[in-house]
Image (cartoon, rainbow, N blue to C red):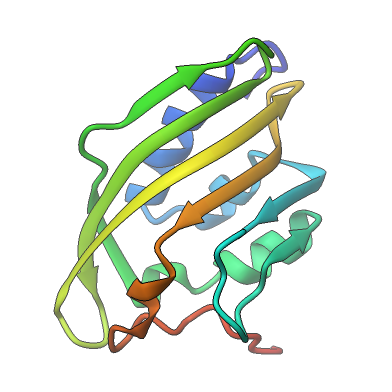
Length: 142
């Protein structure tokens, strides 16, 4: 994405890449030193990922676990900082291991600089990880 891409446009593009299951391209939207945080991460789950490589490792197998179909009702709120947005959204799909539904509500605070994500605080529901087939974020050295 061009360096002058707005945070809103970058975010909407990132959702399209997730729906297309194009994780390498999604990771490519991140700054090398980007930080992804999960303030409500349950014990044993990562609370902070530092750097594009760590984010890539975390997301690598995502489509093998969650088959995303849609992000209905995405609401993007601009802030007084032109590089920061707050996003409210819902992700719908299915859990690959069980075939059961995936339905997660998110709020994210996202910072963008030079057309790349630099910070992403993902306030997802930690209770949802107790559903069968969702436990995909544990470390899997390859």
